[in-house]
Image (cartoon, rainbow over all chains, first blue to last red; front, top):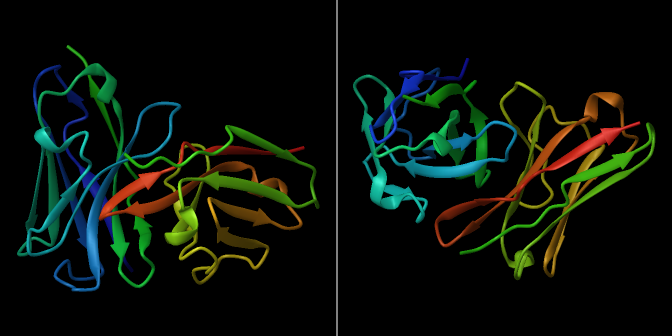
Length: 120
Length: 106
């Protein structure tokens, strides 16, 4: 069964970097049918797209975050990762990873999300 | 940057039809998806490419998109449909979400 699972520190200090990994099970991350994305949701607020990445490493990033976002794919571990630098308290949020299907032109499978708190 | 606008809240009586609009410049020229999110849960896809339903999504969920507005319609609304709904579109390889609409069934 297809499953996406986010992992990473739940607490990050302001001005430091947030690093998360999404482990994919039940399908290969190297499929040409999918991109792999990151979306976040601050408490009580809406969804904000961060980035999506193809297994080759090709990445598209939210322009408002572009200078602080780095993404990567590890095909040997079937996972992809996000690094967001210089975080602020306003970036406290639930961070989701999701599969973006070319067939659907949408995010068709989502992880359960992981809470990241930015606080000293 | 491209923006999608949704009303913050919509109310509907059980058994009635709920309509949730999503507006954006020339939105009808883009593919729109809709997601449902219940409290404490991840969003999940209910409509893609304006009006198509993934496997397992009830027929009472439908979508349309024309001009500057996409609309999610929920027929015969049930209490279980009370949730947040988000529209999403693409703008030159970037992803845009609407601000979300909280549907109340009362």
